[in-house]
Structures are given as structure tokens and as C-alpha cells.
Amino acid sequence: MFSLKKYRKILVNKVYRADRYFNLFSEGETVILGISGGEDSLFMADILYHYKIQFNRNFKIIGVHVDNGLKPLKDTEKLRKFLEDRGIEFEYVKDEDTVHIIENRLKPFKPCYICAKERRKRLIYKAKEKGAPKIALAHTIDDAIETLLLNIFYAREISTMVPKQPLFSESFFVIRPIILIEKEEILRYLHLAGLYENLEGECPYAEKSRRETVREILSYLYKKDPQVKKNLKYSLFECKQDYLWKKFREYRKKIIG
Ligand code: SF4
Image (cartoon, rainbow, N blue to C red):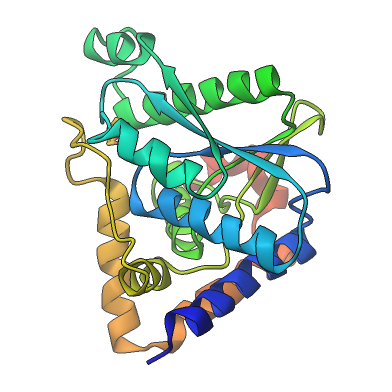
């Protein structure tokens, strides 16, 4: 069993590797952290605080919580204190529209899709207001693997979330600083540090999702063969175009039927 100090060092090093190889942070810039109040976002705030100290990095982080009324924070002041204790400015954004769009079915009823899209939109508005060229989201390597399978199973494509995603002709970026870290590592760290907290409320639409189905499949496979997880991680780097059928794409409906 690692001590907290040693374990933190291992995880900070994973943030360092993500930053180094995916070129996430630049000196002197401001980055908006999307903070839902769940474990992953609290972890991201904490580990970035330690990353900045340990590697003497000079960038400013602002934690932004978008409240769209679907999953209200259990304790806003606790979140504010958590961030401010780590030198992170806290911003609270109220969004009155999303719940209206979903409840009144003003668009095709895809609550999670609409919710995520609208939340990201508001994070981008806040980033623009603060002169920040990046928003950081707390996605893990498990999220990337699940998304890869979700997109194959339900979206008919082979793709996943990337560590650094350019938007608006590369004038803006979504970055994922904890993308090399596993969910299990986050939970172990938060418990070890006595920081385990989930400040997110319950969402009425949080029923059994497709993501949970994929998680169950993966968990079954990981138990049968622990190497599967490592193989999936490596597969994110290896796309053999010649072994896919993309060149026949325009005829796919005629071929598949
Ligand atoms: S479960 Fe609720 S809060 Fe979460 S993405 Fe879906 S609609 Fe939004």
C-alpha cells in the first residue's frame, strides 16, 4: 500500500505525461475547469493544484460549476471552499434554459446529450468572458475506452474523446488533463487523502444508461483477463485504416442494407 505522498506523486506524474505529450497547458494562460461537484472533477481540481506546485507550472485555473437545475449541488459553499483552499477561483453559472428544453421536449428527447452540450456551451461562454483559451474536463481513460465502444455500438463510428480537442479553427481547446488516470485510481486517492466527496445531487434522468451497460461489459472482460484493459488503452493509439472499410463508405447503405 502506497503512502498518500507517494500515490499523489504517481498521479501527478500522469498529469505531467498528459501535459508533456498532448501539450495541454501553456505558461501564463487561464484555464476553465468544468466542475460538476462529482468525484472526478474534485479530483481534477486537487491534482492540478499539486501538479502546479510540484512542476512549478504557471497557469491560472478557474473552477466553473454550471447549474442547470437537473443535478443541483448538495453544498455550493463546500465546493467553493474546496476550490479556494487550493487557490482556485470559483464561478457559479445558473442556466435556466436547459431544463425547460428537456422537460418540454423542445428538441428530440435526448436529455443527457442536450444537457452535456448546453453545459459545455456555458463553459465556453465563461471561458471567453475570462479570456481563457481552454476548458478542462475531468474525463478519465475509462471514459475514453467506454466512449470508443459506445460510439461503435450506438453511433456507428470508430472514435472517442481526445486529450486535446481544437474548436473554432484552433482558437479554443477542450483539454482533458486526467485522461491517463483510471477511475479506480481516483477513488483510491480520494479515500487515501480523506477527500472523498460527491457534491452532485440526483438527476431524474439518470436511469440506467448505455454507458453503464458498456461498463458492465468491460468489467466482465477485465475480470476474465486483466490484460484487456491495457490492450484497450494501447488500441487508442493504433488505428489501421487499411483494415477498415472506409473507402467503401459512400456505398455502405447499398452494401449493408
Ligand atoms: S444524467 Fe442528468 S445531469 Fe447527467 S448528463 Fe444526463 S441529464 Fe444531465
